[in-house]
Length: 202
Image (cartoon, rainbow, N blue to C red; front, side):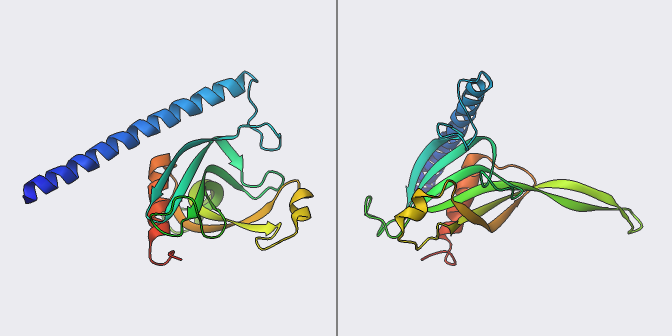
C-alpha cells in the first residue's frame, strides 16, 4: 500500500514537472514572438505608450487562499515609467487573497502586486593581499512588493487617480535571489512559498 501511494505521489510530481517545463517553453516562445513583432515596429513595448504590450499574461494559479495571475515582461522594464530607480522589472504577480479556500470570486482587500526585479549594484574587487583592486557592477535579482505612494493605498479621492499620469510606488524588497535570473516557474514557486509562510500569512 505504501509503495502504491509513493508511486502515485511520484507520478503526480513527475507530471507536474513536465507541465511546468512545457509551460516554460511556451513562455519562451511567446516572448521571442512578441520581441520579433516589436523589432518590426508592429508592437510597442514602451510602458509610456497607451497601447504598449510590455508584458503578457503567462498563467493563473490558485493555491489554498491565494490566487495568482502571472505576467512576464518581454524585456526588462524600468520599475517606474517616469522615474529612474535603478530597478528593472521582469515579472509581475497580481495576488488576490480569497476569503477561504472554496471561495473563487469574493476576495478580501485589494490586489497585491509583486515583482521580480534586478538592479546593478557596485561590488568591490579585492586583491589577495586584502587591498581594494577596484569596483565592478553586479546584477542582483530579487522579489519585492509594490508599495503605493501616490495615489495612496487608502485614498477615496477618485480624482487623484484620474489626474495621476503614472502611479508612484516604492519597492519593498522581500527576498534576494542572487545573480542568476530565475525561470518564470521557479520565481513563481519561490513567491508562493514566501506568501504561504507563517510570517506572511494574514
